[in-house]
Length: 400
Image (cartoon, rainbow, N blue to C red; front, side, top):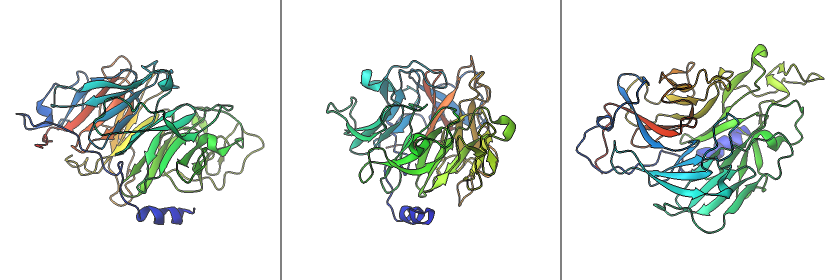
């Protein structure tokens, strides 16, 4: 399908479970605002009109997924991650809040050998999806369930044996027409062209698609996180070649369109061949990134505020968790930038929203980032083993 075709199709679709942040179940309390409860995380500084609270301890907390009823799921892979976190529990945890400030009840939703490489999560009204190294799996889901359905999972996608330097960490998202998307990434290599474009791509999977998926966009090194938003667009964060500083390598935020090609490992960017590849590849048609980040800032999870009670200038803004440099965790943190009202893309380079994040700090390396419908921004710290939330001090607790 062409870029025009996919845009037209998406404009005609209905909003699904990921279109808006799901409602969080919060019981009424005597307090007025979320920030009236708990205490700020010591050593972490946010803008003065915000508070930062610890929500739950979760070993190697990686990816967040809200269920439509407000339950929050967190993946905890047992295998050590490429970024050095782990080993975790080889589990999926469910976090449920009853009163603000009292933290979350933690349930072990799923655990065992089958979940050693669990990473991406997605929850709809009747299905629970998760990724492992070689596949995307689905089980039935009922709202409020605290353990995974006991029926054998069905494979939504199968990637086969890893015969190439493939990553086991995948991301899931659902477009507004209900189409399921998954990411696949590779480690640094010089195999140009790749033996199979699916090794490093974002794919459509599920009904109407082959088990190996249909390519939306290719030429990635590591499309670490993908998001589909209610304005009928899907995005990916791309982590570029580790050795490309001298030739202008960057991390990228891209809006996904059919046929896009980001060039890895042949091309650093449009008209910029990878210097280690011979003969010199043609990079004239490589897709340009929509926005970039400095190499080794390592952006992971990202989301947009959607008029959920945040004050200006943060209303409708873009937020991203930075995992930081692999060697020293430098630049780890949470950043933000204002976003264009029409394109939703950041209008300037992201800057720190939190300070004090890093090695041997209370919050060490931020991985996933998700807004809840009550206005709080949740994020994971995989090396620190916890989930946190941020809220404006003026944000009121829902009375329902």
